[in-house]
Image (cartoon, rainbow, N blue to C red; front, top):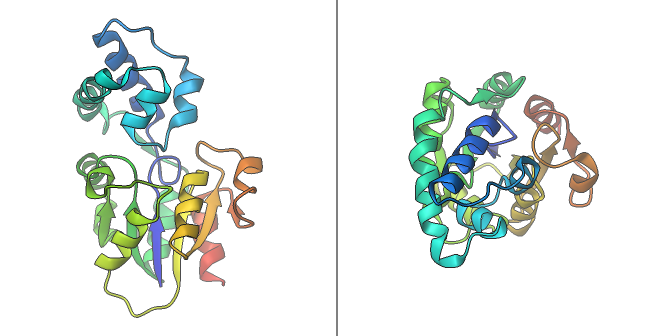
Amino acid sequence: MIILFDLDGTLIDSTEAILESFDIAFKTFDSPVPDKELIKAEIGHPLDAMFATLGVEEDHVDAHVQAYKMHYRKISCAKTVLLPEAREAVELASQHAVLGVVTTKTAKYSIELLEHMGLMTYFDVLVGREDVENPKPHPEPILKALSKLQSNKSKYWMIGDTPMDILAANAANINSVAVTCGYADEALLLKHTDNVSKTALEAVKFITLK
């Protein structure tokens, strides 16, 4: 079996680091900082798409992204925590499956975070934003992760907290479980899947009992 995890809202809570980095990026260019709830509603999308949605003109998006990344890397480990039961979820999953991470975060920063938290050794692959041309909800990130994992098992699962995770899994023709511990509410997730759990650990238990 292969189990792929999303990162933000599924295993980790980096909301504080994300919001602070957006604040710095907008202030760097003397732009008004959007409301926190508007920013949080976009978490899970690639940074360039988030800034564009939040009103940054196309010609200035890359500069905002770079300002964000410069600050985020300085604070990400200190201002990111594991979600409740996330460590237990990864440990349990590793007993039953080969594991990977599929995220729209930069892979480099994602690996640093997981190493800081002592979890990276559980994962055989991590696919981040710079590793693909088309991020979730396109199936490319999931298909790339699967292509790097040596497994003759027929069961493939994606665990994530946003519709993008579920849509990507559907497009890649693999199973999925949505979790409500992240950035999308249960009603929205239920529009895309019947498999909804509260936490990643609950999702892993669901999968291993299938």
